[in-house]
Image (tube, rainbow, N blue to C red; front, side, top):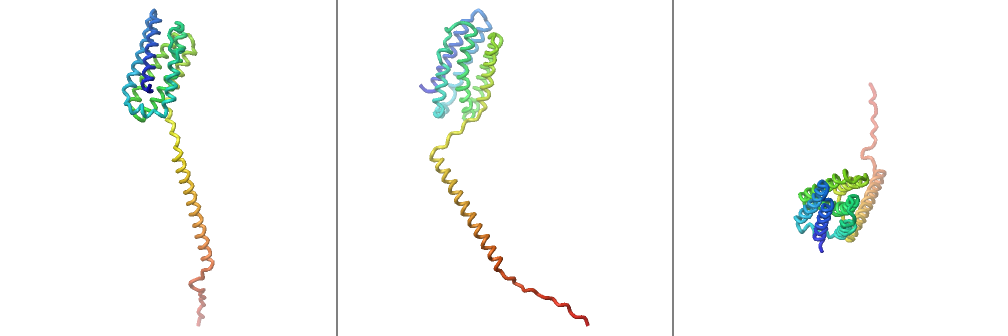
Length: 228
């Protein structure tokens, strides 16, 4: 399965996870509607990535293994199993375990690459993901009862901003290019040494000529004319 397909499946699974949480908290309309909104966010994120041209996904071969590992981490059953307890505390814990690798190890690298390939897609998806995390913070802050959850949610948003702005790591030079560069540097040093040696010899010859040279005009003695 391609990275694009596995990511889309993960996003659909995330949307179902949030809908299942919404059903568990049917007695509280505010919490239920918040989970439903989180599910719609996941669906919109999936739709947004499907509109990115195929050539972009083909250019991710160098990072595909790392991104696939993040997909596997996000879809860990410990995170997406909504039947593992119905406490709001447990739901927030699983939500953060799901969202952290998805946001930092998948979405942030994709947005960084999109900045160079398709700035319009990068901006749209960045706004979408940021709004989703902000919605999570608004849900966690008043209902978690645990400052640690709020701190983790805020830290997730801060880390996402930082990762998105980080520059792409330059690709390591190929061995052939490295050999060529080393040879070029060696040739440059050799040329510099030859030039310095020629300059030194030229200065030495000039000094010798200066010592051997005779004045072109001899000393002229001017005698004072005698007065009559």
